[in-house]
Image 1 (cartoon, rainbow, N blue to C red):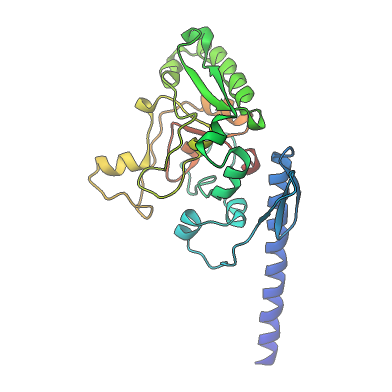
Image 2 (cartoon, helix red, strand yellow):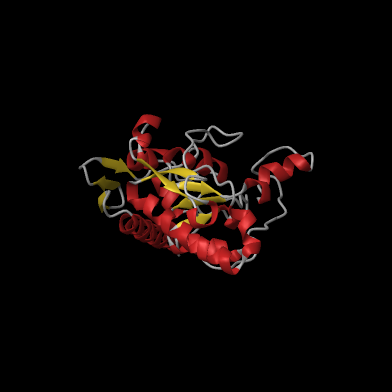
Length: 264
């Protein structure tokens, strides 16, 4: 019995060490993704460039999946499933949906007024649609506005080769909209001006599909994956650090979000 207890204690110790090493590695990826904002990281704190500290853990290490989604710590955010770029089959995880709200408020703005002070208007695919047709408000923080301009330019070249892709790119939205995620108490990352939704009329969204099937909207619902968005479009966004909601089990195929720290 004594030997079993010793073995169990050793296993627990080594699992704990591995978990701490993984957490620190993920925090370092966070720092590498946002070097202008994060000065230093350790297992307990993220130290911001202004000298302020943000706690990594919240003391609850036995959270359910729903608790991590609705009330995450920064550790929950950085330890979630990694985002894999390129073409994949129907996803089984939600890389990027766990968001520690204070982290994004600290980086992009703690109120609509603070976020709006850092917004820049950009033209979306002006060579195709014309200057001023789709003018989007995008944050200048992390040069997200410049990255979306480069994405826009590459998409213009893409649709010249593949005009059949053009309908997916008309009427973009959601670059800035301070709001809650539908049917939740969670603030949407659209609130920070670092996202974009492409044509919603050609998109699939898990909540919409449940409603169509007459089912209750629930995170626990079994979903059948749907997508029409061409991979060529997705790959251009990924090149500039944007994750795609079409790679979530709870799919949202119109949605792209600047989250370079999550890439594998």
